[in-house]
Amino acid sequence: MSTTFVLVHGACHAGWSWRPVAGYLRAQGHRVYTPTLPGLGTEDTKSDIHLADSVDYLVDYVEKRDLTDVVLVGHSWGGFPVSGASIRLATRISRLVYWSAFVPQTGESLIDLCPSPYGDMFRASAAASTDNSVTFPFEVFCAAFMQDASPETQRIVYPLLESQPFHTMNESLDLDEWERLQLPSSYVLSKDDLALPPGEFGWAPRFTERLPGAPVIYTPGSHESQITQPEPLAAALVEAAAS
Image 1 (cartoon, rainbow, N blue to C red):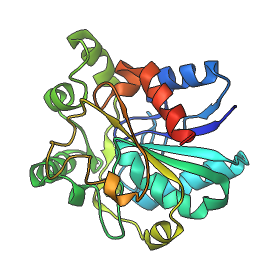
Image 2 (tube, one colour):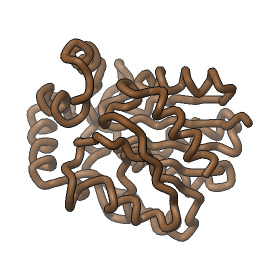
Image 3 (cartoon, helix red, strand yellow):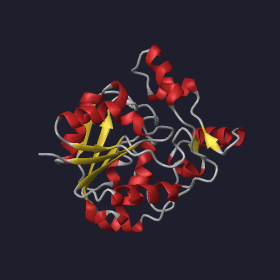
Image 4 (cartoon, rainbow, N blue to C red):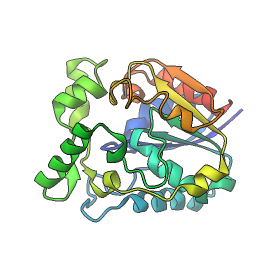
């Protein structure tokens, strides 16, 4: 059975990061869309991009293509625009899938949901930039995001990352309606994901518990499993879609 997937990238990434996973899904006959959200294109300006712009873009992207029965997947920061957009796209969505993703509530920003040293790092990066954007240090990316890749692969992927508009990290959304809707949801978790430290700030059970009754599906690899373990991740997304 063919499924329509809309795959939403995380911070500092873009639609290109889903290419390996999209290839496996399309080979199985699924329709796959991989939008790049505002401020993350190579020529995009960043200083005036806000979190609400990401939500508006995603809603417009789905509506312009008249997509229905969509499995809307958010990775990491992508949980924010996915949650916000799902309120306005509720009749077009068959399931939400959060993969190693934030599941925010009303009034919570990404910085609010991270350990305080992360927030300090993001603020300092934005202050040092010329366009109010955030860049992950290479050492942090290698150790916490893509530790299961070879040094060569890390060096190839890192320059492809874009700086993230700071407003998309320090702003929040009104998600009361998202919580009321209780759309069918699944959570996919990469087993070796270190982007958030295990324990109080870990992905699970902190965010899985915000999706009552949602199945939790595990997949191998790091926070960058879409690149390092794309075939198992594609299989996990198919399983999540059919849950």
